[in-house]
Length: 332
Image (cartoon, rainbow, N blue to C red; front, side, top):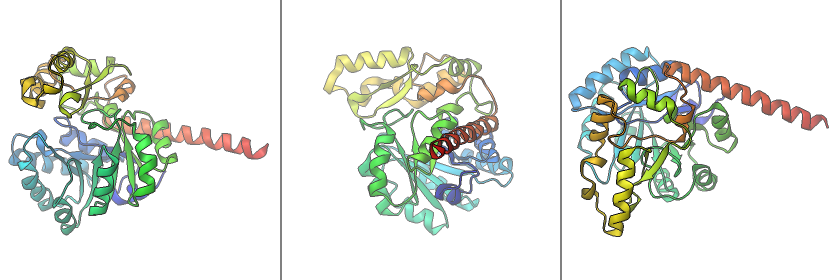
């Protein structure tokens, strides 16, 4: 329908990239997105060991039925990245050639991925980091702004502002993410010069995501104003559900001020804490739960493939509307 350099690079039918989601991007979900024509990424850090990741990868490849799937590597300044090297080798051994990195600069992973015949899109929250990654040889860039769910960095700009400048400085194809949950918005990304949209929070109530029914219900009930950004004080900004834990973290930030350190917040800011309580136990007020305002468009629990199809139809309708307006303007 809409062919771009990114749809060609990753072999996806639609310009929709479902960025890797910690704890959520596992076999059934990633494969469902792939079969529907989007590009999704399995996340090694969502698994307890490389062996567990490999088993899930094998399952994912089987469920994808030949549709392309990828692997995401989160490169953290605060947490161990040891699993990444091992799982890259595992992914390449199983023939995976599409990869996403997020966080710090991917460094030597670029050459390793290229040597294995793969392609890499790197997600950046700062323009200068995106430029550096492009100059270092990544095949594509994903730009996310301050409105993105999860870790948007300390950048103060919305994604579309960064994209406008990035297009002047970067030659490789660029995807744009942050608060995108409709086909109209995806078409808007293409109109701005992006070549795909990164869509994540719209999928949080997907049937294939392994999470407690209470969590799914909270995602369906969430609205545009249900998110809040925390941990500015330690320069590890995290956009999450506005719940009891998030409000407690904000209170501590006000009290500690510039003296705040990551260790001061204890288990509250641990990803496993949110996984154990919100995702597994269903107590959605315990833990930091990543999401953007795009969750407002997740108005029911439904299969990921149906969400991709809805987004594609919305793009078509929006395009037809624009074409009609253009025809009217020309005829006048």
